[in-house]
Length: 205
Image 1: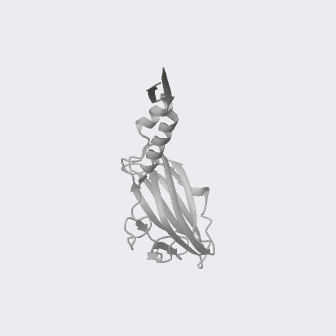
Image 2: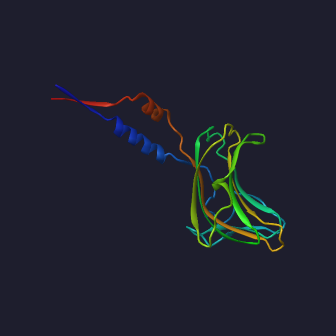
Image 3: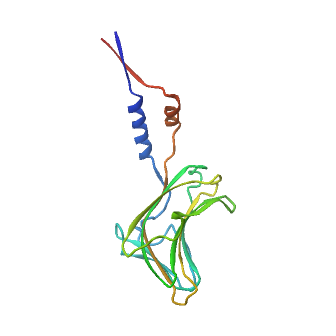
C-alpha cells in the first residue's frame, strides 16, 4: 500500500520565505552611513542646508534638512530608483525614521512618485495624506504603496521641509534608515497560488 503525504502548504511557505529574503533594496546610502549625502538629490531653498549629523536613529549618521527661507520648500530625493526593477502596480514598501521641529507654520512632507521615462509621473501622493507628525524623538514611518501604471523612469521618494510666509517660519527634518524596496513575485509562487498543485512524497508500506 502506498501512502501519499501532501506538502503543498509547507512548500508554499518555504517559497514565500525565500521570496521575502529576495527583497530588493532600491535606495543608495539610505542610512547616511557613507558619512555624506551621496545618493541623494537636493533642491535647496535660498538659505536651507542639507547635512549629515551624528544625531542618528541607528548607526553613526543621519541627515538634517533645515529650511528657514520664508514661503519655500527645501527638497531632497532618492530619485528615479528601481528603473527596470519596479513593475507597474507592484507594491513598494517605504520606511524611514524621522523627527523634527518647526515654527510659524513650518511643516515637513514625504512624497512618493512613479516616474515616466522622459518626464512626468503616472502616480504621485503624499505619504500619510499630510504633513509628517514629527516630535523631538525619532519614530519609524512605514507605508506600502502600489507603483503607478508606468514606472519606466523608476520611482522617487521625496522629503520636503516647507515654510510659511512668516519671516520666522522654520522647518527642521531629521531622517535616517530610509528604505524603498520591492519583493519580486516569481512565476513559481504564482503557479503555487493558482493551480493548487501539491508535491507528493510517496512511500511504500
